[in-house]
Amino acid sequence: MNRWLRLMRFDRPIGIWLLLWPTVWALIVAGQGRPALTNIIIFTVGVVVMRAAGCVINDYADRDIDPHVERTRTRPIAAGEIAPRQALWLFIGLLVVALLLVLLTNALTVKLAIVGAGLAALYPFCKRYMHLPQVVLGAAFGWAVPMVFAAETGHVPAIAWLLFAINLLWTVIYDTEYAMSDREDDLQIGVKSTAILFGHHDRAVLAALQLIMLGLLVWFGLWLWTPSTTVVWPWWLAVLITAFLFFLQQRKIAARDRQACFQAFLDNNRVGLTLALGLLLGQL
Image (cartoon, rainbow, N blue to C red):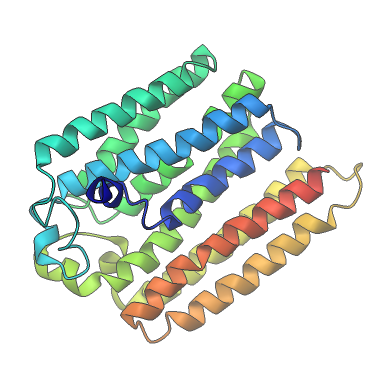
């Protein structure tokens, strides 16, 4: 059982949190601070299931690469603990579970879920052919946002796509930090990433992306809370804290040390939590 849990990365829950936070943001906004309990359950369980599915198909796609990378050579497929065909069947089973969950919502959400499943399956193969797999990952991780709005409200308003764009940018930021910790291995085996594409401009590009994301967060707050409403200081405080957390991340990746870059990636969990609390307190 342990090998299957490791294949689905339940021993490393950071991915669940990073996928869960934009879902939580969407639930708070779409539900105006009080989303339906059924949707909370469906999408929380769905996040866990789809993250597991994403890890399985990622390791299946990387089965010939992972044995040559120090950090991934002990993964179950790479180590020969689980056969690739077994992993593929597990992936299909997880998709079936996710489909059963989304069938409890409505037709629009089901249609969006099909696109989301396609993005999740596509991402692992992008790193072989393009230097922007992090953008595809961002789309896959953020696709829960329009799905939540569809489930809660029956349609996907424009503000949902702004929230989707914010999460896409955020995913590129933190997954580039993650890729910076793997850059030497990726260069050796021919895997592409934004960290390789940006090269020695990586910190400057990340800083620019972080500033753009902060600008979108300000726009989002102005859009969500019109001037006629009460001053929403929790949201603006959350944006300021996020700016400070980005500053700390820049300090950590300054020397491009492998472990420091990975720690900067992990620290994004605090960004997600901060923005969720700002949204929740602002709505209440």
